[in-house]
Length: 307
Ligand code: DGL
Image (cartoon, rainbow, N blue to C red; front, side, top):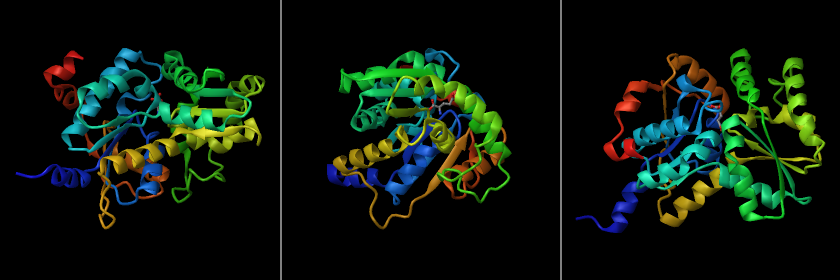
C-alpha cells in the first residue's frame, strides 16, 4: 500500500493538461514550458470547432467538459483551460467535475491588471463570448471595486491570428517575439485601429489581452496603443499560478525529469496544426494525435453529461 507521499510523487511525474479552441492556448503552454522546463505538457487544440468566441456559453461549456474529460483520462495532474471563452463558460463546471486542480486564464490576467494599473482605468479585449460573459469585469472588480473597466469584443483578431499564421512563410521566425512583423500589415492595422482607438480615448493605462490568441498580436496592438499603455497577457500570469499551485501541492516534476510535450487536436489537417503550433512554441510539434468529435462526445461519463 503506497503512502500519500508516494502517491504525490507518482502524480508529480504526470503531464499538465492544457487546452484551447485551437493553437491560441500554445501561448500559455509556451510560458508554462519556459517557467517549468521539467514539466511534461499534454496540449489539446479543438481546431475543428474553432472559433469558440461567437458560440453560446452553453455550447462552449459542453466543449470544455468533453476536452477536460479526455485530458483527465490521459492522467494529467493539473488542467489549464488556456482559452478565455472556455474559462468564462466552463471553469466552475470543470472544477466541480474532476478531482484534479483546474486553472483558468481570466483570474490570473485580472490580477495582473489590478496590480499594474495606476489610473485604475483598465481596458479588456476578447471574444464575444468572453466579453459578453462579463467575467473579466467581475474578476477585476472583485479585486478592486474602485477600478473602471472598459471592455470591447474584438472577434476579428482571432481570424487575423489564424490567417496570419497561415500566411507566414518563414517558419524559423519567432512569431512571439516583440520584433515580429508578421501582423504589421496595412489590412490588419486598419482593423486593429478601428477596434482599439475607442478604448484609447477612454484614457486607460492598462489593456488586458483577454484571449489567448492575442499575445501573437502584441507588436500590432502596442503600435496602436502607444508606449504609455501596459499590455497584460494572462499567459505569463497563468504560468506563475501553475508553478505555485504545483509547488504548494508538492507535485512539481523532479529537476532531472525529461519533459515530454504531446499534442492532440480535432483538426483534420494535423500537419498544419503541427506547423502552426511549432511557430508559436518555437520548437517542433511532432505528430499530433487526431481525436474525433465523436470520440470526445462519447467519452463523457454519466455525471459529466448531466452537469
Ligand atoms: N483562444 C480563445 C480565447 O482565449 C479564443 C479563440 C476562439 O474564439 O475560439 O478565448
